[in-house]
Length: 189
Ligand code: FNR
Image (cartoon, rainbow, N blue to C red; front, side, top):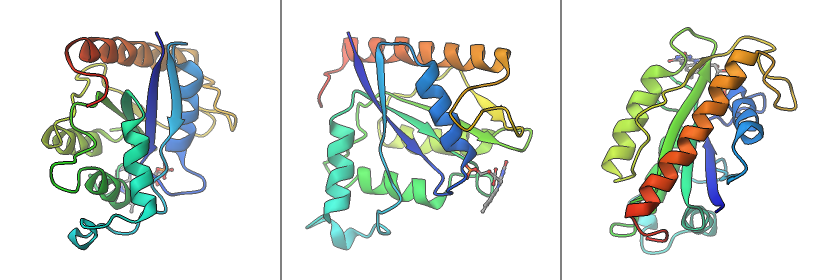
């Protein structure tokens, strides 16, 4: 059967290499996965003051998460952690108390950086956050993508065959993980 996967891009940059990576993953995903972006850029900074009455943009975020079977995080590393915009989106999604949208939602993390550790520390930091949010998280395959100019074309084609194979396998593994999690957990929490 088909599974809906929402993806977050942790970057707000108009020239984001992580959005490019996300586009490549959409192309390389197995046919069972239907990917769509869940946008985060218009969310205000979260405050508990909003808990009594979430603004429409935050309601839309939570509805978008509820409507998908799984979430993929495609994120840069900022100062050895995740960008504030992505953390803000997760904080919104996790609230109000008792209505955590990420609970029991299968997730995976991936990211690209020009640096040689390829967002490893951002991903480790994100894993801790998702763990606390009670989101089942794919342990392996890990994917730390060192981005070199031209690795992914403007229309999302991966130019290096071994990287394409690696990313295709990553998405196949994520599909298998989603199937495993949804076998034991309800599809809509
Ligand atoms: C960075 N960059 C970066 N890279 C990295 O590998 N580790 C890091 O800790 C940081 N820190 C960092 C902080 C801030 C504020 C910026 C703007 C950038 C570089 C970063 O990987 C590069 O700008 C990427 O292009 C960001 O990803 P997007 O926005 O292109 O997807």
